[in-house]
Image (cartoon, rainbow, N blue to C red; front, side, top):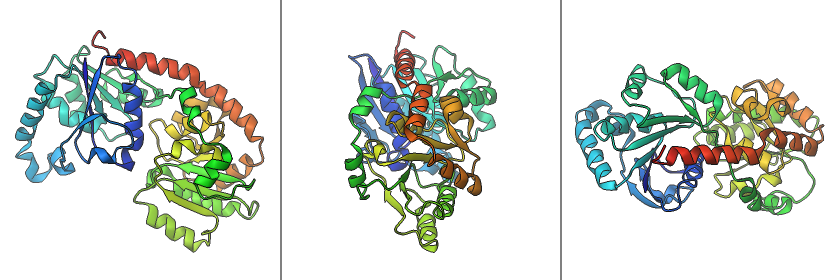
Length: 367
């Protein structure tokens, strides 16, 4: 069987999306051939092995049929139609609403193809989206969301069933790749000592809430002057964060090491992991930290409570003073006990089993 994995783009900004798709595709039948299309970007920019890849090199304006590109949209769809027919694919795994808007109109006349659209986060839905999805029978099109919170929201907006495919990792395989504390700290350029470190991993964009985290951290230093903050990731908010770090005189306290392909191996460098997101579809960093045995402090979002329930340590979204107090309290708690409780709540072994079964069913032509 052939599966075609269609992604919007490559690069660090899309690392978590590619990671999710690789986890899903790992559950395909052993004789399955997987090919990837990148609508934008190059395969060399992917953080995961995408196998045989076709790079379409299309601009966002062209994909979204803006301005002049609306006139040539039929020609682009014809190219996609021919390529799909030649691909030999029986199942299409589609990355999110954006790619679905591009590809679904092409698939109306290709009813032999089963389509699974995986939605990774909250997105602005158009009035036309509901009509687009309603054109396809359930036997051909399946919508899946990476959390129950997101699935419920999409079902309400689209008036169409959405399966929960809560992303999970194989705990044993993940743990085997973790670096010990001293090696992880050395890899980040941190002193190999007992100085407390608050870590964060994610794209440097406004929605990740790192500006709030930085301000809260700065206020924390009055009570914990030896605390350090490391934010791993890259993005358009870097200049603003760097400027604020300089204004606050925190150059020796805050590190921005950029995007690191091996970031998932470094969690043991941290005493706590902060996830101050303004919104999230799931939050892979939460799962990775908990499986690493590191407790997490998160924004008070339903998707995080879905995963950690009462074991989570939560702070109101984008509230600097509340985050400062939450960080203060966290570093006065027994971290190992909190981490153990959060691990039990997340139940990674059971989560991986559920994810594997659901993903295998979605990818099967016998579904």
